[in-house]
Length: 117
Image 1 (cartoon, helix red, strand yellow):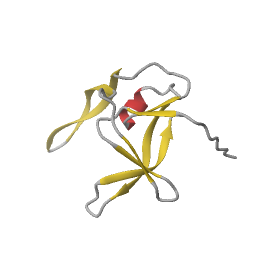
Image 2: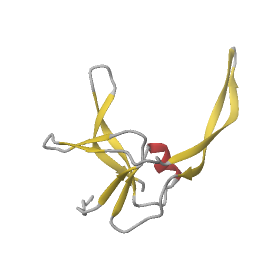
Image 3: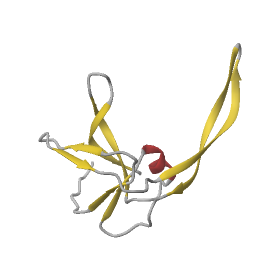
Image 4: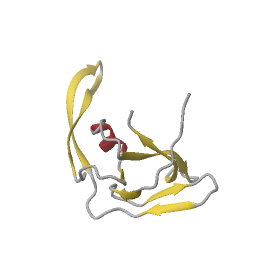
């Protein structure tokens, strides 16, 4: 059984671009980005190769997260999927989900937010 909880929060957009959140009623709420986005370092480890293809097959390893403030009561941080994945124990970190796309396939908004766990 799943339950939903409504909480009032201050939301900070720590991605490098505006985020359009689309409510079930069709209203768009635009969150402008903060001056410094949260970022995560990444490294690639070669794990194999494919015969007759001159490219390595790699595993991505997430590294240090920068630009992410400490958890604060009543503040929700909107970040990229990669940043959220790099901090699995942070309950205040969400990323956009259920994307809305235009006729060219570009993301124009999100109908939900995704939390770890």
